[in-house]
Length: 269
Ligand SMILES: Cc1cc2nc3c(=O)[nH]c(=O)nc-3n(C[C@H](O)[C@H](O)[C@H](O)COP(=O)(O)OP(=O)(O)OC[C@H]3O[C@@H](n4cnc5c(N)ncnc54)[C@H](O)[C@@H]3O)c2cc1C
Ligand code: FES
Image 1 (spheres, rainbow, N blue to C red):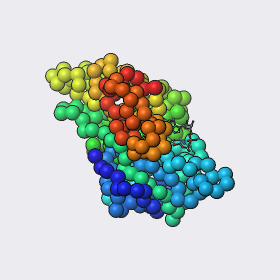
Image 2: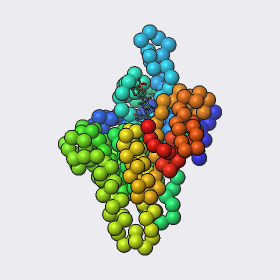
Image 3: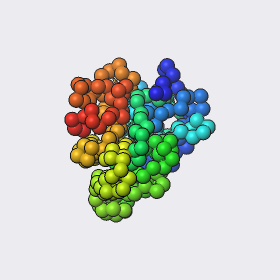
């Protein structure tokens, strides 16, 4: 697990580009540790982030590291849903952010003989990008609400796409693509010889999608690792604001996750 240096780092924004409904924010972090896929960072704009009238965000916000380039540049994929993401989506190259990270536990490698299948919903594509880089471009299935959001699939070339409204790719839910993928895997000769557990699913997306992935994988005895979200105030275990229930009791998602083994969860709420 890659550990965050103590304290927050002031880093320079080097780029921001729109990809469909999302913004990719690039930040120079040449001296920071290389994050593991699935780890996240707490981000805040250095200016315009509270302290003055009408500056509401105050607390930093959690974002998955989507990609790390060889020069240490970190990419984040942002969806503007409120004041914090609105401010971060308005940053221009030359401005600074405060970053704490990398934080949390990321994805574990697939088990022996298992083929990874990545499943993303909306901005949940972010941690799958860096994981795809590590795994060398495995099968990826991505679901979006419409064609504008589906433009984000360009960040994970070769992925199969589903949209809720049918305006791009398969008309339906990404879990329908996953059901096909699991069904195909179970029918293949490799599956017959090596057993059912030859696919390992890695998923990130909205809770209903993750719950559908969890239930589908449980039904077919397919192991899955889920990158969850919860409201995070500190990001490093101090506030207990991020707890989620597991079969073994509550865990702090920021230190015990955000990636959890699907088998540890009764359901994704
Ligand atoms: C580990 C982790 C990784 C994340 N990675 C990304 C990412 O890569 N890209 C991205 O765009 N977003 C990501 N998020 C979500 C992001 O942190 C929130 O969208 C952000 O905090 C919203 O802040 P805001 O001030 O813009 O909006 P707010 O006003 O704080 O929230 C807007 C709306 O989103 C809901 N919301 C806020 N935070 C969360 C949350 N964590 N879980 C569920 N609902 C929430 C609020 O209830 C509200 O309805 C991640 C969250 C976590 C915990
Ligand atoms: S966000 Fe503070 S304990 Fe997890």
